[in-house]
Image (cartoon, rainbow, N blue to C red):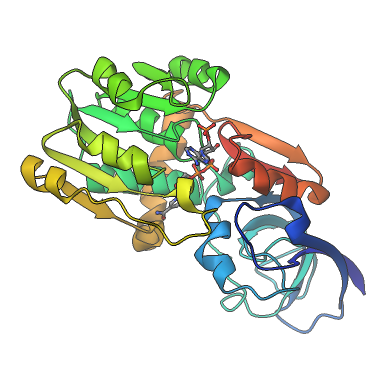
Length: 330
Ligand SMILES: NC(=O)c1ccc[n+]([C@@H]2O[C@H](COP(=O)([O-])OP(=O)(O)OC[C@H]3O[C@@H](n4cnc5c(N)ncnc54)[C@H](OP(=O)(O)O)[C@@H]3O)[C@@H](O)[C@H]2O)c1
């Protein structure tokens, strides 16, 4: 038997997430393996905003929190997964897992990492990276010379959207919640940056791009969206990626009623889930790896050391504690 540490959901979320919403428990995992089975030990975990929303909506009290991890095979009776090999798997917030059925337990395809850090398979080379790549390029259809707005710009997805927009020859305006994050965005090459907590949003958007925006990649939702839509150019494209400003809300969203702006400016506004492009992720991974090698994409991780820090890292997403991707490492 191997002992696995597991973070379970103590109670359904009620308003803002708190570290006390979770329990750390121990489970025994059998290391008696049949043919085809193997045992993994996690090296890196991710916390992502969606864990506050739909995935967790299906998690019952006392069940393991969901999520991806990068893990190492520590015992194996599966010739294609020898001891020491690395997997990316949706095993949740737990340290050890026995893999019996790869499909049911969601062992995914690992990107070709070569000499890149493995944790990037949960960030720039993983789900957030593919969100930025496909959600921006496919829905915003950026052209050289376009002006692009991205909010939540110092988060895992937002910083990549801005960097990809620069690669495509756009002018990029980004905003984040503190001065250090804004400074980092400037270092990444963002043309205009502001701290959204310190400005009148409409004035800041106007100052940064007096002629308005061709593309808007929205990570935040609600009031930000209503204001930003007023600054779009005619025939602008809006990619609705996230609504993080509402995930902790107790009340159902009162809604943003932007249809007059959408109508008058003839905007194209589309929401997406990154899973839409899963069959094409290898395309995005290839470009992303090349851009990293060429120095065109820089990555940053906020690393929390130790499995016991998972709830702290998760709660931090909603307080702006992370710059770049939040990762928990063993
Ligand atoms: N559609 C999809 O398939 C898909 C996939 C992945 C992610 N997403 C969404 O994309 C968004 C960004 O994800 P991510 O992984 O980049 O997140 P992240 O790394 O966790 O960054 C989130 C950042 O959002 C900011 N934020 C938090 N609460 C806020 C609020 N109430 N108002 C304004 N800003 C707030 C914080 O930075 P500040 O310090 O700047 O406030 C925080 O660091 C999320 O909404 C997520 O749900 C969607």
